[in-house]
Image 1 (cartoon, rainbow over the protein chains, first blue to last red):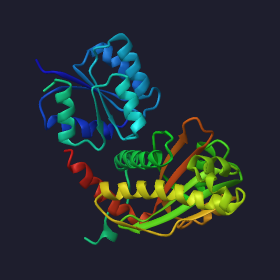
Image 2: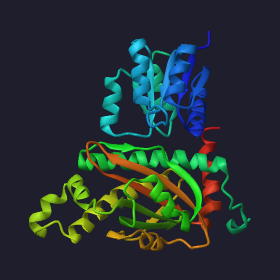
Image 3: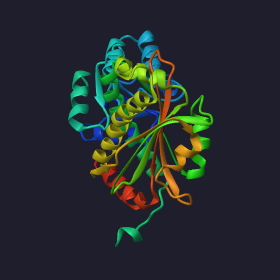
Length: 121
Length: 216
């Protein structure tokens, strides 16, 4: 069965870049959401195998969305994809239990490594 | 076809791609600054728009609390394929907070008091890190090189004067790349505006197409 990846990012361009990068690695079913709040709703609807989460988003940011998902589903596999590469941001999301952090712009090797860590490939 | 004859119109998709480029570039700049000052820099979602020079003051007032008649600024122009005027705006009378954040208050001994020179030096340093890293990353992502003018800083000067100094023609439509930022546990927010000149639009369009081609 094709595995499901949920991409939560307010930028349509960023989602496009990530979808293209993931497509170069393997076949996955991709589901998208444009902010943290919509992403959390989508998470419960589709129960993805992995969620890629942006951090700086309107309506609800990535930190809040990760917390909400992890509170109800501690086993949720979340990878953060962000342009915010400050040490404190990275530490904060790792403390929230994400499996990997991928810097933007997305590169195939980085995304592949993150999916490996998530045991998806 | 000569670049002057090429399409100089930036469409919605171009602006959306530029927003992501700015997002990545400012993320780099904020990380550089955070490392230097050891304070977390909170970022906002960047905003990209096509505006006229006369609309900049309105943008400043609507985006940043405390922006009134006077502002403190650091400005630096850069040119090449991409010609822009970058300005970092802070509300007036925030120089003490800026000095404290940058840690240059230790230099008070040398300057005797929090003087205008110290505030200007500090703003120049802040601008150098943020504008340099941001413009440098944009240039890197769009595969070009830019040259920088020496930065200029002014404390508590009239907003109109600060905008007037930007290297933009009054009648031109400009590309405004704005990012608001603040510092954790500090009462200071600033706004970075990078104003791209219309003469760069055709090149920007081509560079964005090339940038996205790697993701097709």
